[in-house]
Image (cartoon, rainbow, N blue to C red; front, side, top):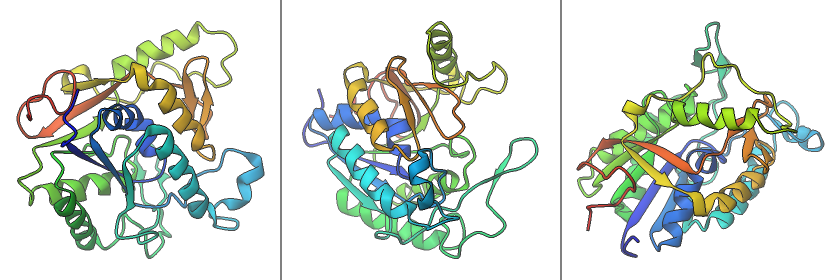
Length: 284
């Protein structure tokens, strides 16, 4: 059990990233009394919309998706017990950049990127905005993504860049973790799903599974008790996520199954060596 004096800040690119990558961790530490603050960098305006009845919100139509996703994020945060949520630089300061997948699978920014796109200009201002939040809250633990942003999305990469630039100026941040996906855990979860009847999503092939090798995972967080909260938060992001609770499993707009495991995985990027399980162990 953590001390109620502990503080954690998570830096995520879009609404839903916090739940997909770290929802159980948020719920677990919030329940233990940790002050958990989420910094969301954009409104996710360029996201693809899953429910047909909400398709008109998309950027190529009414361009109202960002505002709608604010409500989804608030509902997800409530399900997780999140202490506080802020938008980097204020509500709507930076816009979802979108993503183009080039031949070979490499992700890049669209050629017609919006002037306020998060992955465009303004990196220095973004670092300053995050630095102000971290200096105010003074968390011991900060969580974001690794250098590739997890899967190459330009906004995730930028979130990594500004997080690492900001924490370098703040010695009071004791540990920085990158939220990662364990390839072996993903493989094991998919094998379970293959044996379940009625899965409403397609199953990916064994080649090209995302994630990192076990050697890159330094720390895990057991979220078994928090799985119901995480699934509720995933359901709150209904424009972006479809949830099959029997798995548990989820899918994005591509309708390809992803297991929702009872463990979340992290790489320690900076700070004293962490325990194999838990983010605050050894910090007092």
